[in-house]
Length: 113
View 1 (cartoon, rainbow, N blue to C red):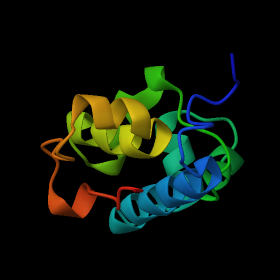
View 2: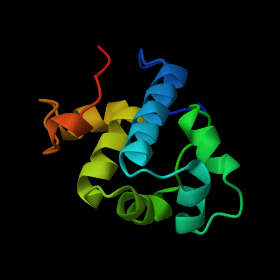
View 3: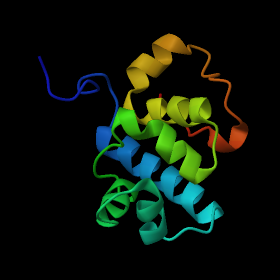
C-alpha cells in the first residue's frame, strides 16, 4: 500500500496541492479576509495553518469542510467537490467522469490529463 492515494496515477500531487492553495487563497481574498481573520473565524489557534494550505502544504481535514465553506462564502457541496478535484482526482474522475460536478465555472480548477 502506498502513502499517497494519487501516487502512480499520473498526477503531480504537489502541483495539485499548490493549485488548491491558490484556489483557497482566491476565495479568502474575495471575502476580503486576511489569513489571521480566516483562522480566527475558523477557530484555529495559528494562522500559519491557513498559510501552509495556501502554499500547497497540507490538506483541510474533512470534518472541517463545512466550516471552511461557510467562512469562505461558498456552497459546501461546491467546496467539497472542488477540493476533491485537487485532493483526490482519481475518486473525482470516477464520480464525475465528465468533469461536471455541478460547480460554477469560477470554482472549477483545471483538471490534469
